[in-house]
Length: 113
Length: 120
Image (cartoon, rainbow over the protein chains, first blue to last red):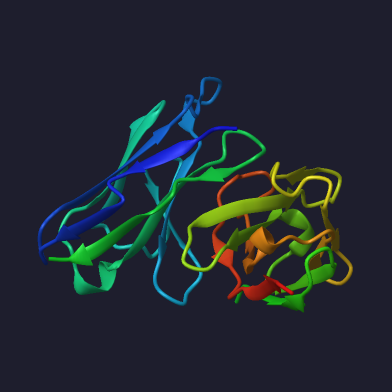
């Protein structure tokens, strides 16, 4: 199975500052035939189900604020929040869907400094 | 409006069985791959199982293969998860989730979840 490892496990950032979360896969999730990275990012707030933010590593889901962006390819990926807002406090997960057995990262807890 | 409503969770003794349901509405159910994802108390997300729109393709995490069975009834717009030989480590909130099209991989809509507790 592909193992997804996120860093850091937790992060505290000041309001208005940039937050960066990393995700590394144990093997490449780039499908060469279509040049797509099979990688998504989700946000989960307490007591709520996950919410899709990014898919194909860098495509923002409809309705997601443009301060959220995804980048990376192959085995190394990043979720960036350009200017942290109070409502962004949550746990963030990456997920690979390159194989039929999907796997998530362990999560990164984002808090306000 | 897309809606996914899970039901069937509850308290069950280790070794017991439970069947979860997910009622879907607001979209053409048979056109979408569906998944079950669980979250143990205070822990992260774990993908459990997925099924193609037609039901012909089913996939399982190694932790549940041979014990859980995913199925769907497209005439009733309902997804199921039959869970047998339950263990304490199966205790979690179980979410059903929709992929935006068959075999897209990522999930764009999630239900609110149903809690399964395997304990004596």
